Image (tube, rainbow, N blue to C red; front, side, top):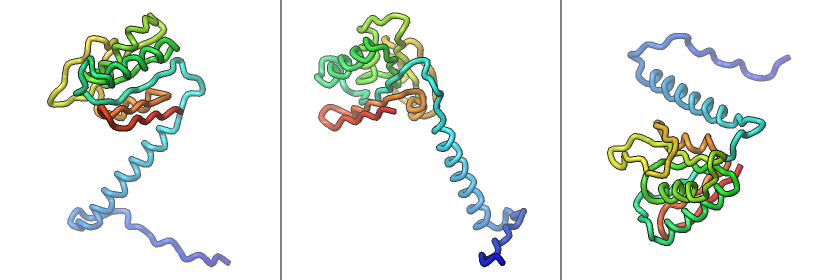
Length: 163
């Protein structure tokens, strides 16, 4: 004998006039889609063709600033080890990372990639990016890389995530 209460039946159709039910369906559907997307992002290839590091950082930091120079130096070191560098392709610390990748002179074995997001400003791709791609969200870069480096601005924290 089953002691669990019966599962209530959900109606198969809902009138658009029932605003609360419509909101529940839309909310449940959106959260379900996000759960599906989050679940799919767990899939990883068994072997990476290339190892990529994505760099997030301020677009306002100028060449010559000590943080700019350190990010450039870090990206050069990673590129010398064979890592592709992925940024938003813009100015500031993104440019520093792409510049460092180019300075490493790793040639064909390393790419300096820019994944741009359409913004009402900062539409120019920095000169150290090859190739550049357009994407809808900043988070596309996260799914392309094995490690992520966050440098929000001059004197704040640094966070590194490695998978």
